[in-house]
Image (cartoon, rainbow, N blue to C red; front, side):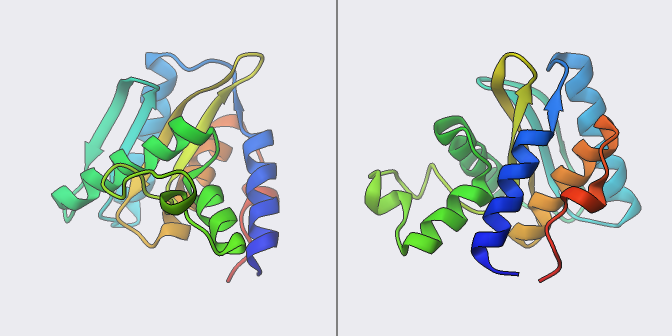
Amino acid sequence: MGLQEDLERITLQERELLLPRLDEEMAWQLGMRLRTMAVERSLAVVIDVRRFGQPLFYTALEGTTPDNVEWVRRKSNVVARFLRSSYAIGLKDKLKNDSIYESQGLALSDYATHGGSFPLTVAGSGIVGSATVSGLPQRRDHELVVEALCAMLGKDYAMLRLNPE
């Protein structure tokens, strides 16, 4: 599947995956769902669910490193800055043969336009936080968050997932 098709699908994911709220309980449920999926699949990932400026759920599973912690921070900074998934921003840059580092002057040490951080949108309120996974190839990081949100919200993941590469 091409970059443009992935970008269009991510736009659909961002539009469809709306939370009724993002409080501590909702963040815990999402974080635990992600953790359970990762443990069942033996995935070495770091998981972070946050309202902007406030971590609500965090776990680092066996096999992760401090690098994964930094990737989470940098990817979630992209969502907070651009209000889009980190993967969408990376794909847009790739299509334009550009980068946020060149066009926005943002430091590589603080921003990573790699997949894995997804905006958490509250219906009627807008984007208030992010759910981030780091440890897998970027497309799989992104899709793990999408799959967990679909399961939590009762959405058909088969209809929203990115098509196989």
